[in-house]
Each structure stands twice: as structure tokens, then as C-alpha cells.
Length: 136
Image 1 (cartoon, rainbow, N blue to C red):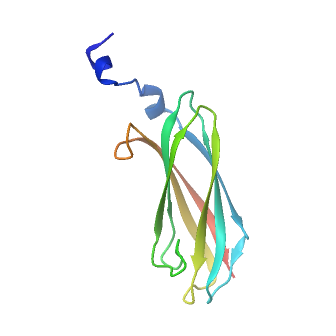
Image 2 (cartoon, rainbow, N blue to C red):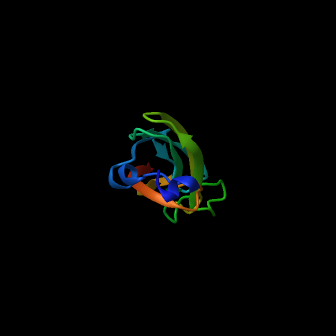
């Protein structure tokens, strides 16, 4: 027993070196309408690849032409998941909105999953994935 074991410190070497999550994304419906207010749901399937429980959160970032709220003012949304058990997966649904100024084209949505230490203030590791949404 070491000195730091009294304070609850744990070995996080495996979490910081490996890939902590696998991320799968899909859009329902698969397209957004241009030049009008429309909504699609980004479905994120997050799976813990590790052998221990981890505190997790997901951050979704959209480009300037889209939004995560109906007015399209918010461009970033954080979802705090809580503890994910070993090999456990969870589905997160984030609405993505177009507005009257959204032009046709392909837009990249960035999904970042974080592993935290004790509280959400400390980040141990992260995984990032880009998802493409088409606006027609």
C-alpha cells in the first residue's frame, strides 16, 4: 500500500494510453432541408473499450450554418453521461438544426468523447470523430 492509496488515487495508465471508446454515428433522417428550419437527430453509439468503469462525456460541435438548438445560436453541446461500465455502450441523441440561411452542401459535425478523472473538470483521454451531414 502506497502513500497515495490513502487518498483514493488509482492507476490510470491503461486509460491514458489506449483508445477508450468506439464511436458510431448516424443521422435520422439522413438529410436536412436548405433555406428553412429543419431538424435531424444525430444518434451516437458510445462503447467503453476498457476493462474498468470510466466517467464519460460527449461534446458535439457543428459548423456555423447549423445549430444544436432550434434558433441555431448554439454551436456546441456537451452531454455528461456519467459512469460507463466495462464493455458497456450507451446511445445519445443530439438534435441538429438547419435554419433559413443554411445553404446546400455537405457539413462536418465533430463528435468528441472524453474520459474524466473523478469529476468532469479533469480529462484523461479523448476520441474524436467527424460525421458528414448533407443539406439539400
